Image (tube, rainbow, N blue to C red; front, side):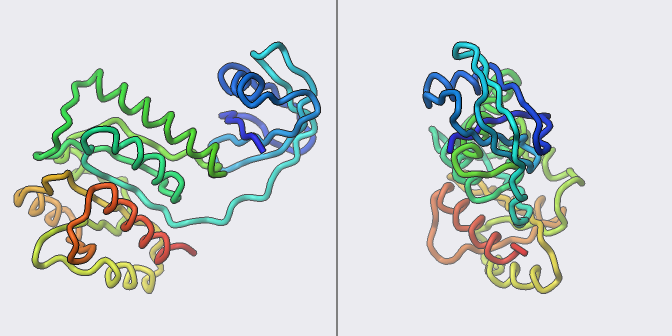
Length: 247
């Protein structure tokens, strides 16, 4: 069933909802929905409903009637993914798959060895693009809470933040890194259901960056003896965190 995004919409039972703009255009012109077809709608805050198309206005607007709210999705671990922006189009893939895997916040970082460099205008444009990718992933995989994709920020600025989960894990290639499995098992035993996963660039974090992260509470964490590409490290770490911390 096709899904439309309607931020701020009232999805209470029996209500009627108008959808306009790109969402309506995609539903009517690309997906070729017609009056009488059913369509699912979600508000990006965890709520979703199904309605039947009662009317259309060309390809620019549609009206959903007699909405039927859907039951909420089971809660998942609250994962914040902070990673150095990889080169090429890998960030698009990472955002897409991270959303599909239930990540709730994505923080792109500029580290010492990050190849990608952005000015303020480029950073805002990239964030907008990745936010669109996140929305499309939500529509495709049935996630009803739209993850936050933040504007790229500097590594030092990121480490000063106090609004992130208590469990802070830095995927690390250093001798004293502890296995991810052990840290996540301990966190689950302690009842934790949120974490930050910090992942570096292709050239890894610098020694100074490792030291700075540890000084602000990030535990160096090993993903095993194999050197992984950035996107592979993301998927492994997120999957392990979901497995360990989900309710």
